[in-house]
Image (tube, rainbow, N blue to C red; front, side, top):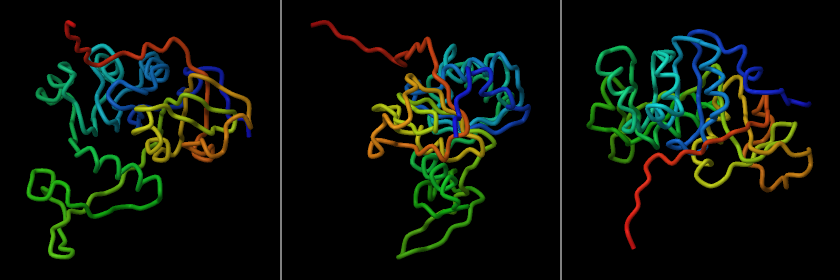
Amino acid sequence: MNKIVANADIAVQDVFDGATITLGGFGVCGIPENCIAALVKLGVKNLTCVSNNAGVDDFGLGLLLQKRQIKKMISSYVGENKLFEQLVLSGEVELEATPQGTLAEKLRAGGAGIPAFFTPTGVGTVVATGKEVRVYNGHNYILEESITTDFAIVKAWKGDALGNLVFRKTARNFNPIAATAGRITIAEVEELVPVGSIDPDMVHTPGIYVKRIFQGSNYEKRIENRTTRSN
């Protein structure tokens, strides 16, 4: 099945107000830049976004925050976005802060059809507030619900018309698990290659998870924090 669409605008055209969206990326590495820009243009509101981070003030999910299109963020790291901090403290945006490993497992388990799991992470902290606690082998574990969303939007290095994806380096951290967690998964890729040109052993996300794919363009690939020193 050919899953190629022409561009980001077409790929996200059915995202609706109030949708839940999982977005790949680690910091600002490997984020679906084209699709985020298309969502800004589309103007959808009241989104719940699940992502490792909330972008920075003028890049990534920060662009959706600028337009007040996000009502809730489920994230593990949000320390580089001053606007997001202001919106959370003012009550304009809800934040569900989640330990990074727990967030990864919530997405992985959701994609695997597992509704919940027990983890020791967060025991004895505010993370455990209101959650069931069980004892296994003499240790406390808290119950965490898995995550599935209306849409998953990811960015890959290479992909083919069947939706098979290959990620590169740090972009492989959250993108593969994010791709499994959406009921409709959209992939933008740096290079769209012919079917059969990707070694099956090199496929990180099988095409069965992906509904739409397109070749993106004009990637900024910003560095979140650049630190230099004199020789």
